Amino acid sequence: MPKAYWVSAYRTISDPEKLVAYNKLAGPAVRLGGGRILARDGRVAAYDAGIGGRTILIEFDSFEAAVAARDSEAYQEALAALSDGVERDFRIIEGLD
Image (cartoon, rainbow, N blue to C red; front, side):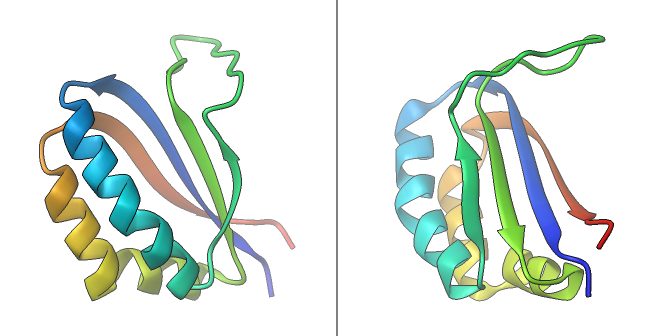
């Protein structure tokens, strides 16, 4: 079964305090859903009008697990804390194998 990934690229962070509150809740919610953070806040080279700011990559054992973690009550609480504090591109993508 292919793994799946959350890919989140932040365009802007307008409220750092909301991001801090989100991070406190999101980390445990991701781990509860079986996610493993592979990359966060490292160096980014953005091409073709890509987003060069904060980027997060999280691995899950399956696409279904990734979607379930995103839809979970724990992660929804984290999103409520984040609210309008950032503008980001968030995607769930299934791996090739």
